[in-house]
Image (cartoon, rainbow, N blue to C red):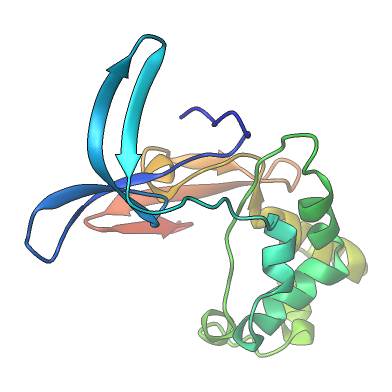
Length: 182
């Protein structure tokens, strides 16, 4: 729950090796090979690989999305949300984004940015005459203003988004996390 001295977070997970021995993996990169070495001012854990922080911002990762995310990427770029998610590095702001692939859009009949706007005009009639506001609202609704791993989300029933007065709901069902079931 605490950032490193670089202001980055490390993740850990217990995994089984080929010999079926459990090991703790750090950032999906390195295994702890010797843990809990006590020293006078802290603890040392020896690892078997060099940890490298991700140099990209959330906005840069969205810009690098492959073609099967073109609708979502287009919305995030045209709303300038990509800029927001790229520019705030120095401020220490953290974001969690819910990405949608073109295939997930297709399950509800959305095949382009324009068809998304058409659905949004029906869902948000107060903004039907303002395409820019609809796109901005949609983009902001997919961004949470905090760092949240799936484990964090599974402990929450709702989360605020960057869209004014808009929340997403969360529900854990067996091994799945369901977003906005209601």
